[in-house]
Length: 342
Ligand code: NCD
Image 1: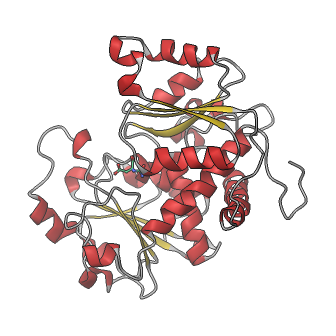
Image 2 (image 1 turned 60 degrees about the vertical axis):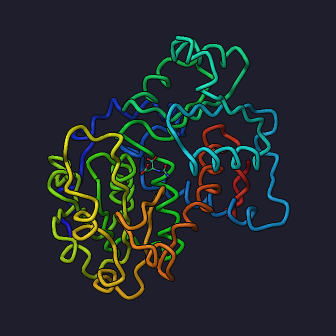
């Protein structure tokens, strides 16, 4: 198991980067990154999501918590799961949702990002859900929006994707229980370009996961990743041994400059999750992937569709987790079992 002393500290992860997301009472105002959040806060997101999962299992999947609030989805990068589950989550909370069509908006006529946002502010939006290809874009926006507006990061460059990490933690907890200390979690593939992996590693650390493994080719392993309290492997068969959770990542070619890779066939031979390889993990290991999956590149179809795969559960869980984050950020939480008031 990894030495807990090697876990990141506030000074290593740069306090300035994240503290704008908390108000003076330590409550979430924006949700930009997992870095620096407390174990209690992450657990309360998971618990709140659990109460929304109960609502999502009913025939009428709607609560009035965000009635009268307006949420704008601004996706400057492609998205299927994240954009649609944010929209569904907002609608199930009874908010009004604006899906800003960036390619058909004035951005394509040269309007700046901040001018677009100021116009949406003038339409009295309460929250911006933003995906952008530039790392740091959502911090930039959160630092500049009007005081009453919250910003949620739906993925910024290769930096962070905090709601994805939380839906992944939710999926792990539902399948493996809440003792993360007993778990060995392997994250496999293009870690270098993955905002998902970075956010997952922060979340797994904060939840005190026993052993976090990163398995990647040398060219796709971020320099200094060991300082985040992970064990690094370049040999998949060695790294996957006895894993409880295997998280596969897509090769993010859109973020690659230059030849970082052999051919896709060679990559699959070395880093693809096949049925054979899966046998090296624990027999009850779960297989996860944030999507989109590339069948035959990082994962064999029969594994992606097989009994150990929870890939589509991750998508379903994304709705409950995004409902939790949006309701917490806007200060309208559901009543929980502990009898807390909304
Ligand atoms: C990921 C993303 O966009 O960062 N997907 C997602 O949000 N579900 C991962 C990827 O694009 O490979």
